[in-house]
Every structure is written in structure tokens, then in C-alpha cells.
Length: 143
Image 1 (cartoon, helix red, strand yellow):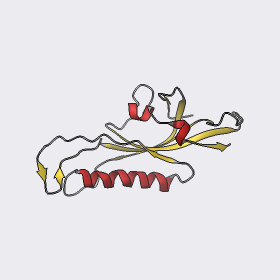
Image 2 (cartoon, one colour):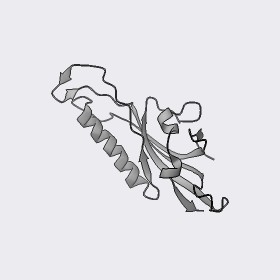
Image 3 (cartoon, one colour):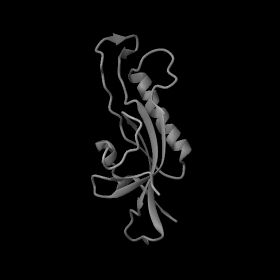
């Protein structure tokens, strides 16, 4: 049973089968969130997704970045990512229409950031998450 279902903008329905969440800035002992720190956070999330799920292609949904304070410190202006980093394994029907629908599925690992620790579903899935170009990114496999 999937954790949730999301209808993509393309109309395709995808199912979330595994979800890993962590706090974006957990363990940050000094400094402040800035572009350089956030670039490392984003690349680290992508690397964890690739290392943890080598069986499928990985896609990063580019995170939103906010600038709540216009005062620049030693590392530039404060830049804040959404507070929860996520990696999810999604599945759907096969992309290739020539494949047997009973024997084949498609999969994609997605890394993204979101504001709250909730399971994304049709009701609350971010627009960027629903905009994934599944047909271009996902990989078909045989059951």
C-alpha cells in the first residue's frame, strides 16, 4: 500500500512508496544559512538520494530560497531553504506504452525541500512536486 498518491500536472498518477525526512539545518552549530551553506545542503541531499537509491534515477526539485534579512554578514545575505529535506521513492505505470502493463512499472527517486514534516499527497503536494516530468525522468522496470 502506498504512503500517498499524487496526480501530476500531466495527469499521471504516482504513488509514494518510501519517504525519508530530515531537518534542513539540523546539526548546524555556527554560522547562518546563506547561499554557500544552502548549496551544500542541496548537493548533500542529492548525493544521499543517489547513494541510498542507486536502483533508480534521481531528480532534484529545485528548492525555493527566501531572503528574510537584507543585512549581509561575513558570508553574504541570509538565505533560507524550507525546513524539511525529503527523499521519496515514487512509482507509476510504465512510461513505454509498448510494455506489458501487468509486468512493468516505472520508478523515480525525488529529492525536495518542504515547509512542514507532512507526507505529500494530492491535497497538499507542492506545485513543483506535481510538475515533475515523469515521462522524461522515470525509468521502466520489470516486476
